Length: 282
Image (cartoon, rainbow, N blue to C red; front, side, top):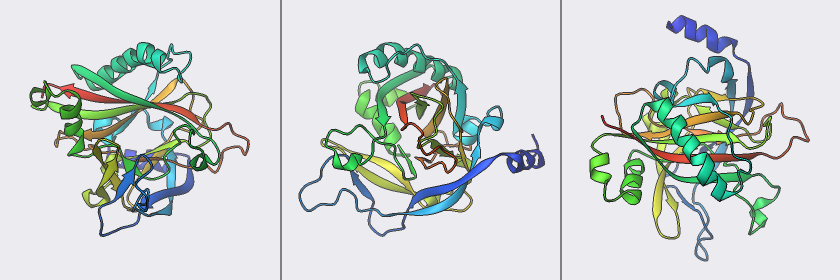
């Protein structure tokens, strides 16, 4: 497809305009705690500012985007899972489904699923000690050029050095649990529209380890997409990191956002994301 054809497709896509919360440039290294920090220590030292961006409908270009070319892909898949909030059923039924999907999409010889997160948006969640995980409303990337390979060392220490001789990716599979989804949809940024200076390595502090993610600074070149009214038999593949330097898309920013076209009484978002390590021989 020629550049002119691409531009014509993009210009004809429907879109919404909504706020994305980007990192305010700072001199310190950004830090976020995943738990209540020590007394007197703020949960985060980072500030974010909203920028209005155009978020295009990804469905019409589903056949023209891919993980390596853009950092994301839209799949059709009906899961056999009955209750996504049943962790045992998710591991027993959904994990094998995800493994097959990721292998098929990437051509990888091995996929290692290392965790999953279910989210259910509830009002005033920050005031509730037992609130479920909430949609993340800041632009970020789950792993970095350093932390992607480090997860292999953490999770598969006996095999890590051999596995890291090949290409390694961290890929998430995200889907709504109830549809059509209107509340807090997930937006993804075309990874080829970001600049390396937009990505800021940031500490994600857990009780027993410190992970590294990318916070993201605003750049008007960023091109955003989402799937309006996303259904439960649709899923997004999202590339968080890739050790290959020979592909256009390696790190993909994403964030939940408020869709201005959503109904006032739209059901609160429920979603699940599964995180995988993806291994190629070269």
